[in-house]
Length: 181
Image 1: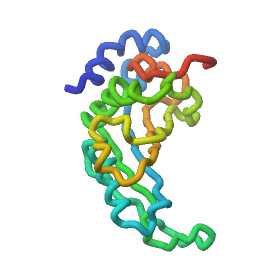
Image 2: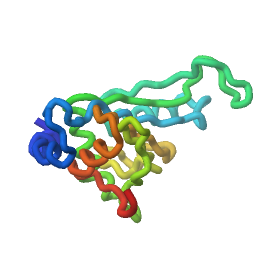
Image 3: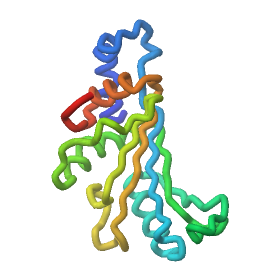
Image 4: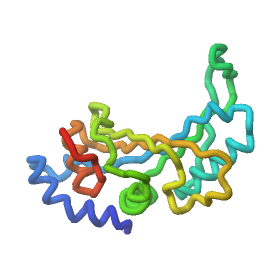
């Protein structure tokens, strides 16, 4: 079993008392993690899109898919069917393994890291944050990447309120920045 899942099972009673929830089944839990990269800058370069896809696949431990444009937008010079991004959705043990690696290895490797922002909650218990470069992950080989790019990570929880999701993520060890709640 994943190390982070063991930690979640260990903190369940403490989380239940902290949130004041009577039923154990109502406790918030991680549902999925989505890693996405918008690569509109590489629309015409298939090798760069392939390189980004391979990088995200190695980071996630699961094959990433290329997202294509659904509509043509003349102002952005985008045609229907052009690749505009790369994404991967993680669930189950791969999700827990990725979150454990993110919390304990990758985020501490960031330059001048003071925690991830607290204001990334969407009002429904989901958390979004962005990373500026992919080099913080140990799987990424510096010589194999063609261009440094960022990524957006969305953590979807079963919580209905932001404060419940925040408390759960904080107890799991997510390094939030110090400051106002």
